Amino acid sequence: MNISGSTIAALVVGGLLAIIIPIAAIIVYKRRRKDAWLISALIGAGTFLVFALILEQILHTVMLPVVSGNKILYCIYGCLAAGVFEETGRFIAYKAFMKNHRSAQNAVMMGLGHGGFEAMALLGAGLLSNALVAVNVNAVGLDVFVEQATMGNAELAETVRLQIDAIAQSGFGSIALGLFERMIAMAFHVCMSVIVYKSAQKGKFILFPAAILLHALLDSVAVMYQVGVITSLSSVYIPMVIMTAAVAVPAYKIVKSEKRVEAQ
Image (cartoon, rainbow, N blue to C red; front, top):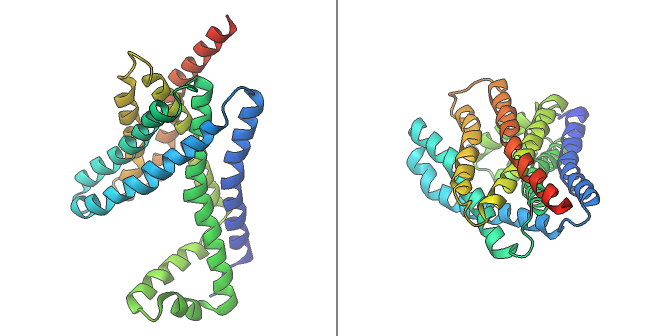
């Protein structure tokens, strides 16, 4: 097997864009709002790292074997887990690390850091890793690569071959869809960060469980696609765009109202 140069190029370009776009978004926003606290973006990234990539994954090791045999339980768990961990992480971050920097503009910055790091970690790193695999497969040949990667384990070798087949079928179109999904997710994280910021204020706590439910609702279509309840990608992306646009309305109003207060 020889993985085409166009596939490798698509993987590299897509991986770099998944890293560059979030960084560029943070820089542009910082230039527009010079008083925004840049550390907010790092707190957002750290929140995703700790609550989504570490704590949530620990729970998955316990819960996934329990719910994986039941589509309904799997969907309920899959929808709620990300919402509970990520929104709780945001709420704790506002209370613990941003006491003196809680503002709508810093909430936007935090959301860019959270969603941006997610794009870098889940898509950018994955695509660049796949590009490296593709280059190595072309350099030594599929059989040699699989033998070296699996140490002769036949069962693992079959899994690796399937993964390499999937990499070989990647193209600019599929990777562009992945980038589109991550950018929508980043916009959603910005909106959620603003809403959870508001929930951290006195008398607004009800917005915190609302944020968890909104996050679960967004994830529901992706989880249903994973288990085969939804089979069309358009049936995943269209609801994602609609829901992100819907939560953008209250988030925008929160940011605008705070700007009006600042201007007075």
